[in-house]
Length: 369
Image 1 (cartoon, rainbow, N blue to C red):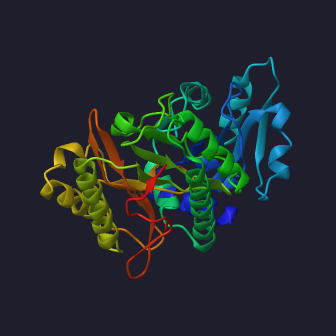
Image 2 (cartoon, rainbow, N blue to C red):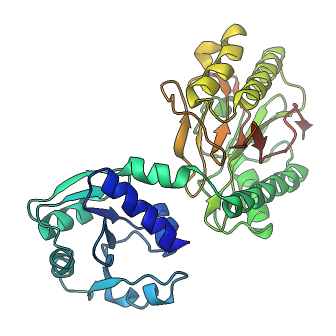
């Protein structure tokens, strides 16, 4: 599988006029090679020529045995540096071995650090470093059956953790205490990691789409918003549900109904051949007709997979048609400053005939506490 993915990368690189692709530690390196490296002070970089030579890996000497022990057998050229020595020597050797001087090199503009960029520039004098992000987006946009099954497991673990956490929620608990309860349930349930720090916020704090859990106690009349996910086998889930803590006000109930209808409209619109822009417009239309358009302040969603946010994006201006195997989130929201916010988010895979929601936790308003 890894060799097939590298071959597809090389074909795309040649088609786009690149001589080599530089890959940083992170999702793209794991996707291509199965190798996990920490992003740290030891600069690590994979260099994959478009053709003609074996790929090179520049890394600290203490990790020199990792590639051979990795899940995929790749014929690496290894260039290592010991602690206390200048990594530029290893980078320069890699650049000479791959004949990178004056060549066009594709880089991950969303992941490349200045440190690795400077080392690469020095190792490839006269080379031109250009954006290769669209190639990686193209490679990873369509998920295969194994990837989708892993993401279903991640969604199931997240939803099971949410059910167990709701049983423990009581009025007076702080957002942080609820977040801690959720974290324990995620790990007990089989999550290997988290795609991002869970957003557990209540009352006025829920009107901040990316707020962090704090010390505010949950009170009756609050809405309580959970936005979180689970990571399994390197793939993520991402779900948001909003609950009523006791009786909530009429306006928040109206807002909830609008967001629910917007979520339903987005899921009904998603299908092969439909664009992210069309899904965004479908959810936004419901909320605008309900006269809360000004309070829906973010895009409808994003792609999901080995990163919590990846291509394709569900946003105005993205006219690229969806394909079967694309996984997106659909997460409309309304945020009323000083009162509260509502968001309902699902993970949706595009199928041959429409779309399937990987997340199935009830979407109707549930009262807790």
